[in-house]
Image: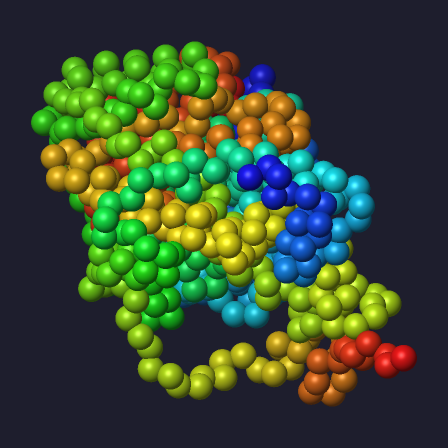
Length: 111
Length: 493
């Protein structure tokens, strides 16, 4: 698994994580992530009981089915209750204008 | 009275007078007023907190106002925590209290609503006096990853408090409040409780509402209390451990104390001997074995057991916790709240720079680990496999509990270590959670109790676990154990 952690892989994971890394950080995380993933690699070799074989989605489904518990995961009625005033929410935004959250221009300028 | 330990005080050494139980009695009888008690308590906190760095925001004005409000009316029967000061971890929402999660990302963020536990505590007459330091977004085992700086252990300030609820743990151990709240995702309450010589209890997943707790690993997180006596844990659980329609994973029913009618005799406890072989410090092993021997004299039977899937504890936990964290923390994007970077070029740049500036190194590491585990090509090998092994583990535990009352384990492999000893190697730090994580992965309740260490020795915690939903039995067992005086809060002498 260590080989999977090229600088490019770290950059790609950072991109997916919406994180901007400096060159030094890339070097550091490359080493650390490789070491951690290597330590966790045994997981992918664990023999599983038949009913749990298959892809992760079916494993997830099975795990949920087996662990079903009457007292868990009930649904709530979908009612809007505006218990917090708009201005209280807005008070925490980094920038605002009237009842809006103000953001910088989000599209790159066309060239 | 003077003590050798500079952090010592009447609050921790005259333990019985300063438990929540006795404070409620004193306040209700009119012998003393909550506001008078608070005035003195604040002096104590302001004297020693600057060095320990446990409390990040002491809400004196609010607390005194609240005390006066309580005093204006007669105590009511349901106010089981009448006048009791309580400190909360700063990842729990309370209106107008800072909810910064020890992160630059949430600097200046204040609570907008009350978490369900806060509503319950305040209905019961408790006074929330402040919020406590923690590891950033609850990620860490030593409280060394905090934007507020490290938390120091009152037993030896050169040593860590444990984490991630280090601030809440030290606040309780140093006498700032008889009961404090933390959150336990992989041992974040039990491990600091062990390091600070107090009690920390992680309830069954769903027993205490998570509504208003800032999410880290949603299938593992549980708001959990610290206390200096088991009676106080029992008391606070009567208040906060109940069903909550606002949390869809909340369990039906409520905590029903069994403390009154419990005996140790005839209880069967499992020990996983293979876990004790590697990496355990001598003092921890010695305390562990000594309590076991002493308990046998009370008619407790110990049985050797094996839970094979425990071999994968760390891998399963860090894959699942990081995957959930990477998803939960995607909400911090610099748009609606939290830190926003300046001078960005486009939307992606705004997200990435805001997040990179706002999150600390450990949080970034875990987000990337989680993103990797969930990415195409690795999802099945890591995340899917981790879910399946977690399920196997839950079944193995359930089958063990068919024949046993409890499982006995150390809480952590060592006592509190010195600053910097493990923080440079993430894997080494992760190993500190190996005994506490299984309870989170399988959803079962677990308590860390302080053993009776020799005078001047560092605290050692040991852990008992019970089957899902048997929180009250576990607390009753710990209470019976406390009465034998084989365990008890480690004094700051």
